Length: 353
Ligand code: SAM
Ligand code: SF4
Ligand code: FES
Image 1 (tube, rainbow, N blue to C red):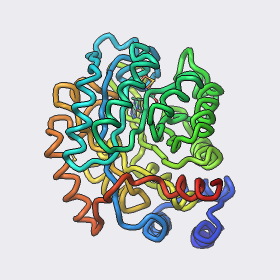
Image 2 (tube, helix red, strand yellow):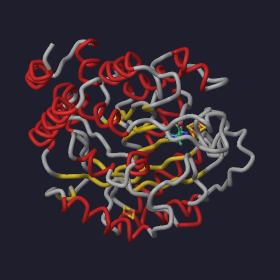
Image 3 (cartoon, rainbow, N blue to C red):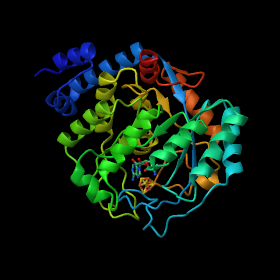
């Protein structure tokens, strides 16, 4: 198998076998650079040079789950917990709008304090005040809740399946079920949300075979947005003494997914920027077209510690807004205007309607 042949096939068919994906995941040197170059070309042809910004509002650091890798897990007694109140969340959304953001991402631990009615009320208030797309990233809920959030005005939903390896899933997510997570993702899709999903790269015990399956699962779920990032060990979790995921492998996953899903949105994640000071730039150069800067106050940013060393933790939201724009311009790209809806979603909708 030659990398060039596989890449030419991916370029024209947007389809690869598992073995071909594994071959690309193992590529090194010039072959790896060729993979990145193909992905960058496909990104340019399908989604253009615009990089869309999403204003991330992490509104609660409480979580009822106990994911082994995450600093917000309920067993982490040292985690600092906070909950933002409705009006405060709406104020931050307004501020994000004033800074030029046209999408806000409402993210939290799985926190039942925010009942169906509370979440609906937050969505409606934001929609009344500012013309932004709303992405929710608040974990697993019932079908009725997802339906109510959608009816209240939520546009998108982001929830990674984290790993497609069931054994690893059960091991690292006590009390949770892989089947339920996938069912939630299917409900979300069926309710007409723009669906975002993805996985962690470098979980201890994860193999190249697992990553190939992860990529295929994102494809099968027909994701409109693809959130993938390296695992970073947190000192107050059971995985504290393990190694972080690889930046290179993350970039390869981004590239392969761009080839397979040319018109989906793919962020260059904060975790990638945390492991490598140029991580986000590298991601944007091999297929990514989205960045999600945090727009919260510093007092909250510091407390939402999924992993240590997070970038921008001491930077004010206005500074990040300027900084990210200069990064984008330095790459010869530009900040996208408008909602930046996934083209994948847009095209599918046009076919169905
Ligand atoms: N609670 C919701 C959920 O789990 O879907 C949303 C918030 S959760 C903090 C968002 C993402 O953070 C997760 O999907 C997970 O992949 C990522 N994350 C958590 N701990 C991490 C770590 N130690 N390193 C890298 N990413 C991590
Ligand atoms: Fe909670 Fe999400 Fe962290 Fe898991 S990843 S502990 S669900 S915040
Ligand atoms: Fe936050 Fe650069 S994006 S300081």
